[in-house]
Image (cartoon, rainbow, N blue to C red):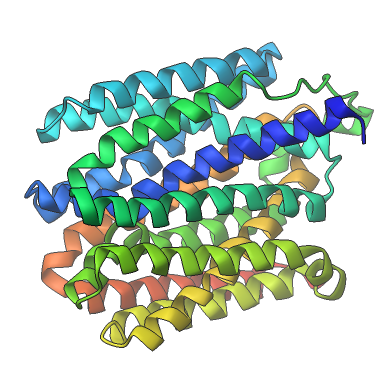
Length: 384
């Protein structure tokens, strides 16, 4: 491997580290921070879901600009600068309205980065899903480092240090947007040029996979927004909350490293069905076994399937169908439908239902969403 190629892959790994390092701060502790500021549950549901709400439409805008202009590097740098600006403003926000505005600005730009880097990575690796999974592991490592460190940092200094910590991680992400490698525009085959974006969306397999990913992230909405609050209410210390999240990501790392072997032995349909079966058991365990640390630990191991395997398989479908001139838009649409619309809908619905149904009811409904996703894959995907 040449030095320039190694440096390019290292920059991609560094970007993943910072991007998901930010997620490692926000997912476990943002809801706890808002609860400490005495925001009501419905406002917590909105503010914890805003990062996902922006993923519904913002990546589509940035993806279209990238495909239309070919200026992917410029757009990535703009995203980094905009994200930092929003988190600077967040340092001074303490009311719902000002926090909503600052976080919207920050995540509007932040959400632009991932689908563009995912497309760049798949171009760089020529669609090799196994090598993609091994590179994507750096994001999981970033999540672990920040979530564990923040747990002890917050335990020692209070949850008020969270906004400044997020700004520091976002500054690192902005730096890496200037170091990412340049990938020349690929030469598209006549078949790729002839296929219209709407024609691709009408393919049954594409619609089924996107709908299934929407349901998987809908099921994860309560997990991303209220998991830390739920387990803290059952006596789990803040520092231990970080380790619970970390266990899930460690399981994710192991599975990412094994994806080449899994895809060689099992069909993508079979892997997705397994993911939804694990999701059903996982969210039922969180709903009804939160008093048992052993049950919580076992449930976190399920993240290996409900996130890692599901995401890697979905990326395979996206790269297969949207290769060519629609790659940026395809990646953006996948992020928007799943992590955007799915996760934000799950987070907001759980916020509205939390007081009426409680954690048991909300996480049980999450398991029901996973049942629907499994049925959709079973009926809608052809055997390979």
